Length: 225
Image (tube, rainbow, N blue to C red; front, side):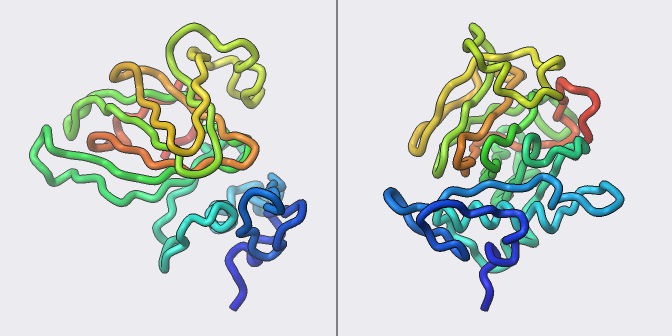
């Protein structure tokens, strides 16, 4: 049975001393992983969500994250309408988002996925009829990320962001996070973003209930959800 990584071989360029069809090593001998942006777009320029999902599944296999039955159907992916998925995008698996609980007891648990060098764009969360403002934090499981928020700008961080997102950015303080690190918002409604490291990142987000209607992106040109 062919692995999902092998099915995504046109997107995942596995480089180095590892198993090319399923890079599952760690430490010495582990392969590296990279992606070709053009592969994620159909001939008419539209984003191919299926291939986006395959790329995140490739990332899961690369890091040894459990690829459970039905994971592809459960994955949410987006390129935010930019046409530069390898630079700006997100994959997410929702495990809990308890809209039916009593207010004050609603919670979220999800895993987030970013490809190598991929950015989760700057955004913030407002109060809605369904929920209070969202407070959230992220536990890095695999890979690494620069978690961006309020505070004194980190030198050189703005220049690391995709060119398309630099003019609209308002927060540039970066916190470097690796496996086992937990980073949270400094306050509710704070603007924040993330930038994945060279091996991408897989992290668990914990928060109160997430309402898509509460999300506001600093770059008004982005399409969400």
